[in-house]
Image: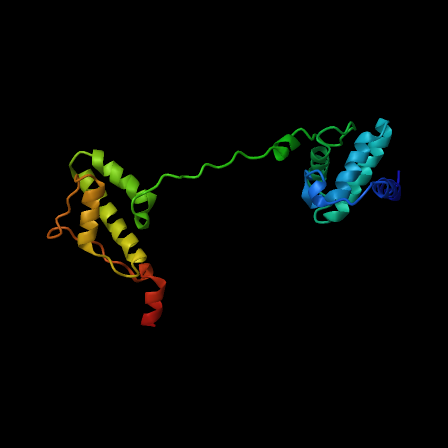
Length: 213
């Protein structure tokens, strides 16, 4: 069976359709990258009465698909991929002798599960979810060196976040107040005794660095 035979056969069917054929009225393509004509050829192959005809038609379709993707056309991986795609486009209804095992194509055809998106709200956005997780951790930690270390890390991260958000300004008193507020009063910074880390030049807001040049 020649390529011309398939294309002419499909063209005749299209010409007999009544009215106009709009994309919005058409069935959704399983693999849009191959286009609607290839999908029509696949449907034509499925409908052929004998296995021999279906086999010849499938091999012809694969050769057309191969021309559409010339890169790596002679590699086994590429050929396997094309037969997998043919199986997917046929909805696994094409009764032929596949030269490759297309059972793994089911994994390609399956849609991935939608990813969960964190929707929980936080009172102050510029600190971010990570800092609020640290606040929750600090609420339940017993007093001691470990909590003191986490307090230093949290306070300095708050300073960096506030520094970026306010374009170079970070009020130590505000940080201490926010830390006490969001830990329900568990953490009380003594600003007379606590030393914040200095903000490095790399952490300076972009606009401020440009002005210094």
